[in-house]
Structure formats: C-alpha cells, structure tokens
Length: 207
Image 1 (cartoon, rainbow, N blue to C red):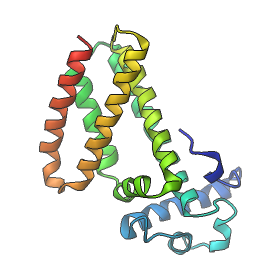
Image 2: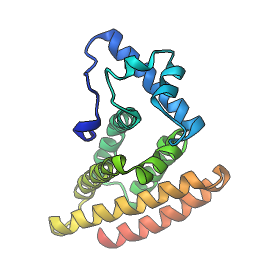
Image 3: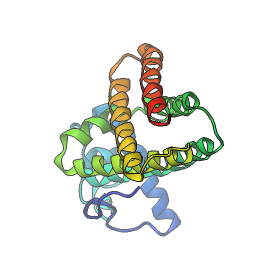
Image 4: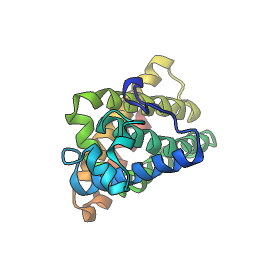
C-alpha cells in the first residue's frame, strides 16, 4: 500500500545513511505518537525525539501528516506478508473458523500491541488530510479479503465476492476500534465474540 502522492516523501532516501535516518525518524515519531497522541505531535517533536534538526525533516516530509503517512506505509508493508499468508492458507482448504481465528489473532498481535495505533485511529478519523489514507487502507484490505474469499472457494459472482470483502473490512475496522478502546484484559472476550460474529457471517456467504 502506498499513500497519496502529495504527502509522501519529498525525497526518496536512496543512500544507506539516508534510509537509516528516515527509519530513525519514523521510529521516533511512533514513540511520540504513542506518548503524546496525534494532536500533541509535531515535526518539531519528531525531530527532537530522533535527535535531528527539524530542517532536515523538511527534505523528506512537508508536515506531520507526511511523516504519519510514511509510518502507515511502513506498517502496512510489514503486514503484507501476513496477508499473503492468509490467502495461501485459505487456498489449502482450512475451515471458516480457522480463517477467522487466524485473522483475529493477527489483529490482536499486529494492531492491539502497537503502542501508537490508538493515535493512528484518531488521526485517520479526525484529520481531513488523512481521510484519504483511511479510505486507501480500507480499499487495500478489501482487495486482500477479496483474494482470500476467492482462495477459500467463494463460488458466487465476482461483484458479490467484492461486496462481502468490503463488509469484512467494515466489520474488522469496527473490531479494531473497539479492541484499542477497551482495557487489554477485555480483549480476549471481545475477540471471542467477534470471531463468532465473523464466522457466522462467512459461514453463510461461503455455504
């Protein structure tokens, strides 16, 4: 997944030193987001946390939205292999319940344990500049779920399959928002309830 062109890196860090600097800034920005939230973050706070000058950040990003989008891109790129694994396992004939369990476990591990994710969710919904990113992330998930349904043997029309994939994205987005809102001790019971809901839905459409 890549974010919208007007907010991505101004310069592509091709040299090893530049790539290392960008990675250091993104790591620092994640810590700031986890600590201060999106509204409390700024290019200045990112630079201070990373131990670099604010001016140097302008070489790569025009504002904090640009840094945020770079973080989102990096996170989604790291998740791509996981999603490809979902599709591969679905093609091997695992059950609907196993597919759902796999997805929910991944949501808990990759998203529930990511300190800056609550700030991410707030930013995607409150910052007009980032709503396009939210929409693009949802399209990406819908595309992955479409492939998963196809691999799992969905026999209906392609349009229907895409509609089901879109609904899976909506359901998982709502689950993720609640997962990040509740006390961590409540997450196992919440996950179990969501697994039951998603399994029942997919059991109907894959019948």
